[in-house]
Amino acid sequence: MPSRRALLAGAAAGLGLTALPAAPVFAQAKLRYDLAPIPVLPGVWMIEGVTDYFDKVNGGAIVNCAVLQGQSGLILIDSGPSRRYGEALAATLRALDLRGVSAVVNTHHHPDHFFGNQVFADRPILALGDTLAAARRDGDAFADNMYRLLGDWMRGTEPVPPNTALDGGEVTIDGRRFATLPLSGHTEADLALVDVETGLLITGDLAFLDRAPTTPHADLAGWQQALTTLEGLGAPAVLPGHGPFDRTGASLRQTRAYLSWLEATLHDAARTGLDMVEVMDLPLPQEFAAMGAQPQEFHRSVAHLFPGVERAVLPRAN
Ligand SMILES: [Zn+2]
Image (spheres, helix red, strand yellow):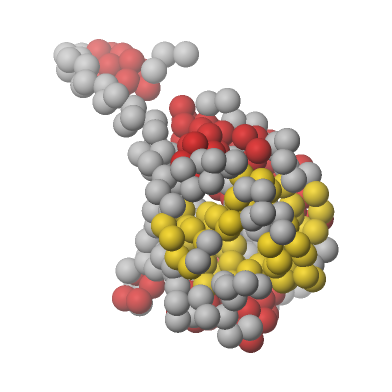
């Protein structure tokens, strides 16, 4: 297939313009993930993602992973967006424990949280049963989209769904105890975990901090209920799915505030009769405009959610 650049040059020639000399092709920015585990609590590390949208510079390293010391190795919560990322994780984590990763947990079935599984496929990979089914169902479609967004970063990546179903309740993984909470709202199945030893709450994408929440599979009312459950735990520290480590619960409050504002804004807009483009043009309050990946995530949320809100709010034609 001719490259986009060749097509553009051809189009320029067809218009009688002199094709400009080809712009230098930037060497695909290194294609190497620099993953640095940050110690956050005794025996607990975090790999912190950038707060942007997927692009060919960040290689999809937008997600937070938690790493906890287990008895025979490290327990990894969420495995990143690609095989290459999983390999980088495996190499980096051997510096913490030579035995490497002993078990993986996927909080939900979004590709940035489970596409590194391939590298750990011979180990237990735990998730809620509904996450397992959803990863099987949507994995290939997600892969197509991720290859489109990230190009060469994805080379060799195959979606590998989790291999062990969790029901919730107290679970011991590689000798470490977790309270596991089967919730939903960000997707159809969202697992939150409390590390019993430190009290750390690992929310998956039920909580974001200083990065706009994503809503392609969201049920906003269910998500708010899940946040109420998580707030009720009074955890001393929270590791959100995206954004910095949180020692005050700000991620739970901010996610709730954003979802409430989003829902109210979409309902008001539908009642006022705005069309989708007009809704996308609405100014964001400063506190939400300042989040990473804005206004793109707001635009995506309008595209996902506004048609449904319009149907719910507008009087029926018949
Ligand atoms: Zn997600």
